[in-house]
Image (cartoon, rainbow, N blue to C red; front, side):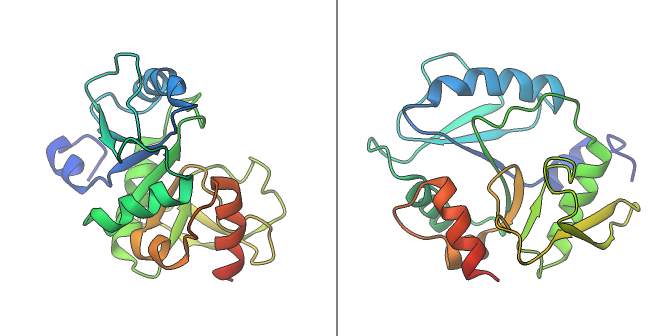
Length: 194
């Protein structure tokens, strides 16, 4: 199926997108939303995980999921989400990882389908290998549509980065530490999952 050929069927297959933020950074969500809708898809729903909702008005495809009044530490916020949702795989992003160019919709759709069909996939990073990973990857395989996939070397410091990624929920529940920042969680999970 070509991207957009059957939009309703395509949207039903799409993974949910969750955006993490904290009270200190919630002012970034409005710009994130503007860039997301410009470069990705203004019809794609994004669920914002937060304690207090952003003050600015957001586009209608951005929904707020309040996790209570307390500004939980990042890993506790994510753990709370994973304990409450039924989704086996999700797309996860931070509010400060702005999208600055158009998304290859065909590639993303193919990656989402690949992640859904392959239970052994715990994480697929959505960033380019040109974003600092040159020389730290090995060829992994190809998607159904022939897109190349790469795997980070297991000795890489950030084998589990929280940059834009598709995650298996059970993987996060198993390895996500409690009471940690995003940066510290990346290191801990990377070490545990090796």
